[in-house]
Image 1: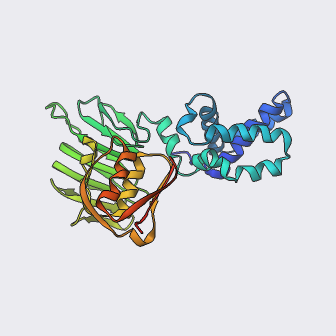
Image 2: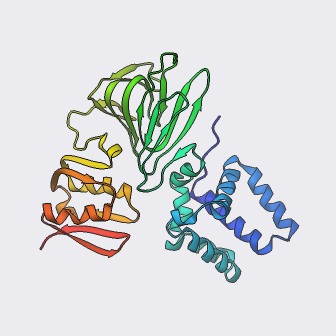
Image 3: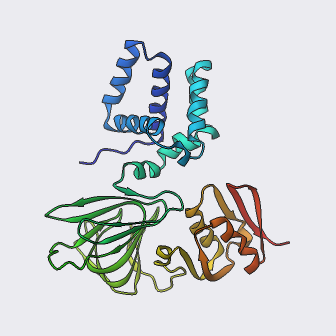
Length: 322
């Protein structure tokens, strides 16, 4: 049985316990109270371990504002009573730490995963069976390879699998996403875990879809793109972006909405990137290189009647050219 994932409230509690122990850790009663809280529920201990790991063992530069937020809380805890500190936890300064940790635990998934990539990073790995796995930006997977199975759990993000051609492999290569279990023997396919669905694209071979609780099996053939969500499985007739191009460091669009294009580019950079509603439906087609997202954005005014409004490096908004 999988332990419950800690939510934002639990993460905030873990941060407060950490700060209280830093301030008064010599008090046995406080240590005992903290131990009771950690033992009360599995998600308490999980949140505690991850907060400690975040603060002590990991590079906080990957979390915008996290280091500053924790230092601010630590200082404030010495000056303010507990109610004021809780208010501070809800403020903008802690978005990089508590809210960042509590919302889907995306970065924590990367920290605890067998293989992971950061923002803007793409990496390739050779799996124990000889298959090639490529991870796109902000992706994390766990592996369960043994004599009985070859299983990849896509925790977040996007992967491309080129299945091994070794003749002695009897078990299918499985990719578990939130919506389905994907099964492939040969060929190449991409799986992307979005917030509300799984997207699957097959370039060679074919992939079987197992939906939990349905007992049904569907096949995705070469050249097909599918969307899997809570309502079912749907083949996509029109695809506005090449699902495989990211493995070559590219975004290739075909009559894509500007809003959707910016959403894709934002996966490869930190901070806010958006556009005004009046230009959200502008369309663009082309080939764009991902190696420098900021330079990529500079190309937009050359192809569309728009301008870039930039407050900081982390805040960019595309607006209509006036």
